[in-house]
Length: 538
Image 1 (cartoon, rainbow, N blue to C red):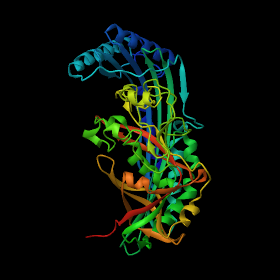
Image 2 (cartoon, rainbow, N blue to C red):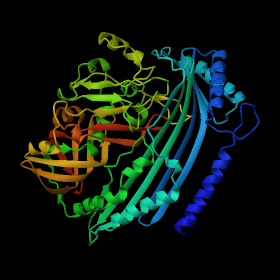
Image 3 (cartoon, rainbow, N blue to C red):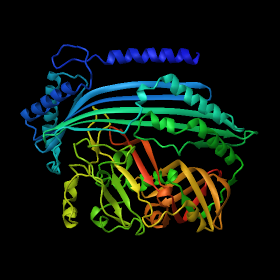
Image 4 (cartoon, rainbow, N blue to C red):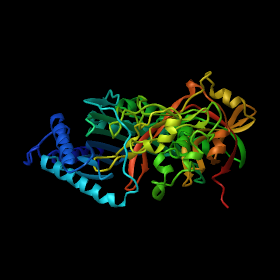
């Protein structure tokens, strides 16, 4: 099929699906076309839901209406491999009755349905109360009368023609294939737009629109005799909570030859000799290590065992032995949680409980100082907060993937703050190493169920000898234990080395939900890390 024919057929199919899914009943039961995010209709539905939940006996209730659109486009070499454009919208109602949670959801947007679903949620809460261990207690929240927030967007990605997006990816593929030795190229483009309306019995009413964009390339180089192949992902282009301007500014066509050349260079690179090395980790790599060994183990629900069946618990347990006592790293190590960074994937105006997130130090001067919380979780730490002179409040870490999913604790943007005293460069980090490796870009990884023992690969590896980079390496991965690794960090880079990486799809929970989160960090130096050769066979 010719590319234009494919696009025309895809566009026609998408238009047909969109027309069908836009037929929704108004507040009366008649099925009449309406705007799924019409402000007046959303507000009336929300008020009816809250009133119905109260009338059924709920002591607390919140209502979330969500309209989510996602688009994924993929190409390989000179052809399109997939295209998907999907939209879903509906509402969910969460309540507390008899001290327990209940939740129900529906895609039918009409007055009768919100009343029915509210009553169903209350009935579920009453049934759950028979098995509760203690009544749900919520931390206080500030009322938001008419909150509005949107991601900083210049170009709505859904206003950009598909033909333009395909053309960009195919031109980037061609640029990569122009490098001798580059044989295969996969490129993709992801876009999402999340429209959320929130209301609660606390009197809050909030409307938000969140955009995310992620262009990605992977280039494979193959040796002339077919004896080896090496990959390079475009890890220095991270996903962002921005519009199509992020795709444009990524300059895929201009950067593709460099990524291809780095893939080709690994074909003739020297295989690493296993052993202990000092490492300089660039932030394009280090963000993932932060995500797995700091951000996940400081989720309070994971520490308390509520995530154990799917993705493990945390080595930070029992809490009283760690909070305010455990040394994560040296005095200059500060890990910040926040949801305000422009373009941060977890950045919002308010979380899915109507809480305005704050900035807080998870690790302060090397010591575990705080944990990620929701309104339900913050009271679990009430004694610690009072002893520390902190208010008992949620940090605003509640999130639900969609209207049909109940909100629960998800991480904020978790960042390693740069050197506060001076702007340390990558060259300075390298200059202090006699025998080491610089790692650029994230790769494969594995980590245990307590986030304690792990192994990380990367994209580009460079040998360091006597304070100088001497050439490329390949087949590099390092092993770590979280406390020893972070306490082995002896220097961090300055603001000029800072970069924000992130995950477009981070899974958690049962049923599983996907979140997006950013992690900013500078380059950093680590001493005496065990490195293995991933290419050797027994």
